Length: 376
Image 1 (spheres, rainbow, N blue to C red):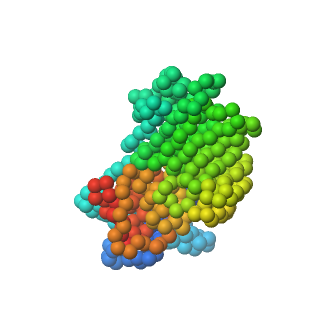
Image 2: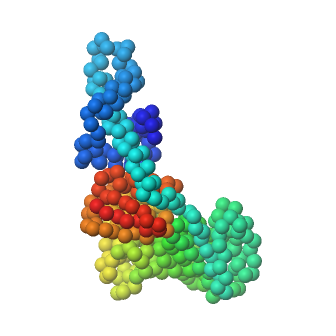
Image 3: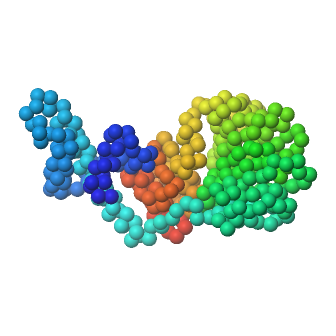
């Protein structure tokens, strides 16, 4: 990124048209600079400031209005922009140097979506859901399912007789999200490192699936047949609603977040029950239930290929990145206790996202093969 691009980036930030990733870059830079206070020597800074001042003065219309009686507020604003632009340009210059240094240290440029979901049939046969299986026709062996050209795995809505037949959909670490339409019309979005076991035909009086990992459900309403999601330490029961379940084995708690309707959450250990209203999240840790109001956009950002985080610790963020990019994480020395806020994108490479976090000045990363080493 050159100075002109940095200039445009800051303009987008100031007029609130910057993307979440761009906002995160600016805000992380600001936090870093407010702590560091110094990037380079005074001569370099003054030289760069002079160049940027000329461009800033021209954009602000100062050259033609030096004698205007209303000029002073604009000078103050332009000067503020100049200082920010100067520091930002220097920051980006260091950013490029650090990227080169990272490359010399064999930093891994790894992207998400390099692995594919796998469908496991009742007979144990495995079907990799890659581009070669797009448009896969329905058939007896496949249980009447088809993989559309858009990658959605869907099942026929028929009165089939093969009850008791189960399929499992596995979305491994390093894979993109996978969409699924169940036989009753319920739509499911599955995150990386997740699996769902479900029947090809639901029973007459209930619809039950088993989840490991994270998935978002838009349940088809059927008053006579409750829909149940069995996951680690709990069961979620609904009639027809939109909700998200995060039940990864490496997370300290199971989280159920409601978007629409009403859900019933039952703890497996003691059968304690909690009911959720839209915008609420139930967290189950051990035998402790807690219900709080949450920002659902942050919870569901993974569906849009992003991670929004606010006041999150590095361990929580790294667990997500490990699933996205199929890497192992190792901590060396004291684990940073700082809290992080911002946005990172699944479309970016692993090293790009790590650089965003690293430029807060709170944490350092080195990639060794498939292992990400985190230090303070």
